[in-house]
Length: 93
Image 1 (cartoon, rainbow, N blue to C red):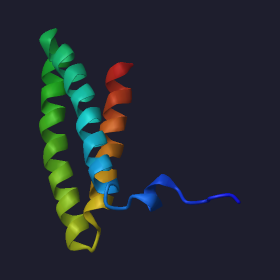
Image 2 (cartoon, rainbow, N blue to C red):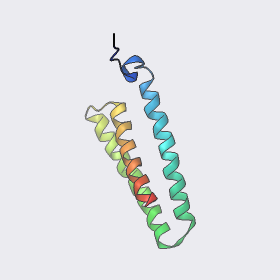
Image 3 (spheres, rainbow, N blue to C red):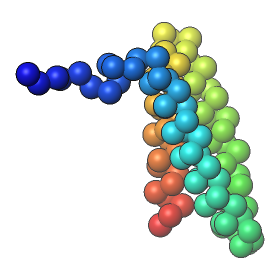
């Protein structure tokens, strides 16, 4: 007999914690990449600092709107992870 239950279905109470933990780890990597870029100084460092601040404001507005529109916290966390992944790709290039 084969079991088709996924890990997420087996432990539903752990999934939100997993997503939050992964967001923390992924964000930490982006913070490290940004710190390296800003430590180099110059125009690129200033542009990165400005971009970082504007992204924070945009993310707050997006998350607030999503929650007011009926999104779940898990959906908001998922969207944050998408932004973090995009930043990681951009900064690693």
